[in-house]
Length: 495
Ligand code: NAD
Image (tube, rainbow, N blue to C red; front, side, top):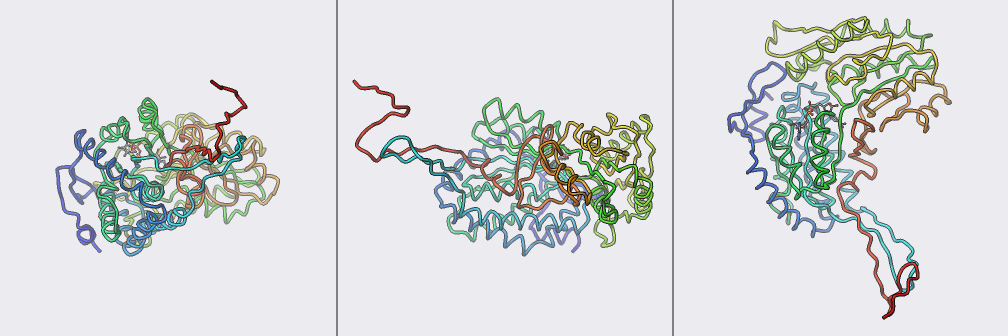
């Protein structure tokens, strides 16, 4: 399918004046119209109405809508995955993987729709029953980043919908077409479901101002925002100022420790996938590698040899493993970081723009390995590009301390066959990240676990486990079925 077939498949026609470029070659692939404060205001009003109807639908029935949506995703995995490739530049395998992640979270949410468990708590008063229950929260605002243009929305939306919420999605301004395609699929599913209120899921397009308008609005009790730490710093206080609940999924600076006992062939494969996959543009991309002194001179030359042969090119070609950066700004940021690393005595292999003849309006780069003596300020900063900083270590504790000594706390891992090291790594004094893996790279999480990180990553959790609780409000309800009115703590208050 070529670009116009894919757009036609989703019924997407150019509308509005905002041009959407593909990072593959810089070509225009569509036009969209942006929302403004007034249309955001109206859409939130419609979402409130949708919520009021939806919260009355029993949760297992709500799950049925998500099941239908999951069916549509299965049927449209190929074109949607390809649209992800066209708009975000990730290779087809990763585009398809992203849609699979949407399907997986729909399945999870369908099961969840028959759970949403509360508690029964022993009451100290006779003839009383106390319980804790979870009720729909309201309108859930979703702000998403360009690098996971569809999966992150689905993590939020599938859970929010079974929880009884309505959703409004503000996708990245760099990836509006994938959002509109998801909206088309959702509306198709909603049509087949008897009883879905209009405007249950809506999209608002635009720059950060429309995201801010949603963050400010007290009719949106939960705002789930995925993006840079800068964005979180701006958005979180706006939501908190009106006592809304932010769910923050922000930047990462993820590390791997390769210990002397590690299976080096596994470590090498994990490093490659997580450092150069999605051209280093995953929140969980591997950015810092700590290699034990005793194996450094074996592993690092091997790594450099594989980097030298990486197939960089059009992400639509099956053989490509490294596609383009999203835009010029991303390329400039990479150049700047490599410049600073050089000033900090970093030894750089790779880096620099390639394929300029074939793609003069796109930004393909050679992934870079930068050997550093220390964890300098440049290493502590998340640069959203394929730069891997490599450092030596000699003692396990020192490696863990260095891994933790950055402002971000998303993902981490160790390659070791030493049980003590593995257990220590995931213990209270081990990794301080939201994700800690043993003999698995830092990226490519499954949807069953709660996803998110600590410190500047924002503390939010999405996707599996009990992340659903963030999309509901908790209520403690006590019912008196006796003929008396005993007070808690035995207080006497008789007239
Ligand atoms: P970004 O912060 O530039 O933009 C993300 C989204 O926030 C966009 O939709 C943007 O329009 C919106 N936005 C920006 N400023 C805003 C504001 N003040 N108020 C409301 N909305 C605002 O991020 P990006 O370049 O699209 O994505 C890359 C970043 O996202 C990286 O830092 C990456 O680590 C992070 N990320 C984190 C996760 C995670 O789960 N932790 C997942 C994906 C991406």
